[in-house]
Amino acid sequence: MSELYDVIIIGGGAGGMSAGVYAARGKMKTLIIEEKRKAGGQAATTDEVENYPGILSATGPELMDAFRAHCDKFGVEFTKGIVNKIDVADDGYLKTLTTTKGEVFQAKSIIIATGASPLILGVPGENEFRGKGVSYCATCDADFFEELDIVVVGSGNTAVEESLFLTKFVNKITMIVRRDHGILAADRTAQEQAFANDKINFVWNSVLDEITGDELVNGVNVKNIKTGEISHIESDGVFMFVGTVPKTDFIKGQVDLNSHGYIVTNDKQETNIPGIYAVGDVTEKFLRQVVTAAGDGAVAAVAADRYIEEEDNWRKAVVDFDGTALVAFWAPQNQDSIDVINQLETHNKGQAGKNVVTIDIFKNQKIAKQFNVSEIPVVIRFDAGQEAKRVNVKDLNELETLY
Image 1: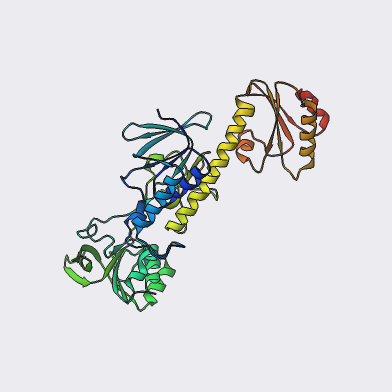
Image 2: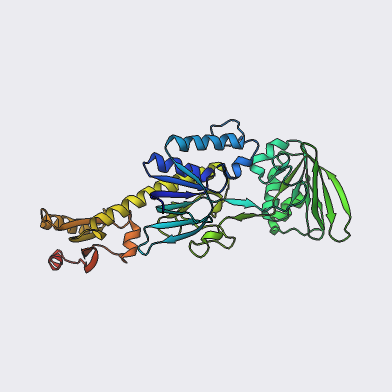
């Protein structure tokens, strides 16, 4: 069993390392578990990055090396491994992670940054020319193909939308479509836009058979699924938009996923499990880029820090306190709740073995929800960490029943 970490981040891509920087800089004991020998995620496989603010030009590996150096500066720990199990303690606070090698780590909070992989067709040449003419991201790489001819594989909404974006840069697009003539997998509006664009041509009833080239892509071989005929199309690049696969198998049945397997989060990157967050491409989101993943990581790290602070304070003042804790649920705009706190503090001032604890129901919604507090003022008395009495205060005199 490892030592206890404040936060363990699963995945060392842009989102994970951004979270690492923010967490460690906030004095949280931080560990990143990365499955590959070198951190960086999908961004590390991109030849050139020109759309990360403040970085005019860098290769993907160079940018991710800078992220790693930033993590090292603040003392983020790294280890290689693949997490295949997360166990949450009965009280919801301690999280235990187990890797495929049987290593066990413990943390107060977890940030899932495992990413999503492009769906790989596995055709000859696809892996060989990845980053050398084969791309999975139009926003990342469109300007490298300015005034050139390219091929797009796929016909769903993503393929069509990305193709329309690519027409702003390229000379011509040939879309390879498995379906019959005139039928795309995209919705009607997207189809109409694609058919109306003079730069987009279609090869129907066909699949990609091979990507050809020397040092860079120079064409593709396409197979007609009805006749079996193979034809060659000259092309300077191939964009693959046949889908992505989120890396969420290890967390299925625990965190909420959408219908495509991506993790559902709120604006604090929180999942449905308190203390577990998710960032970057593994989440349900509009745009998957290095900059958006980095932003997610920053938000999650700060949210995790606040969560730990609240939980540690709650445990010290209530759960692990041997005496009596009077917990007042309040809100700054509710004068009655403020009056309750003032009376509690006046009555119990200087009394040994008694704590007065205040919980703002808007700032600490987790504890308010845990104890089913929706209206205020409410005071709960805890004796040695166990709830003993609850008063929904209508009159200050009712507080006498708590003493």
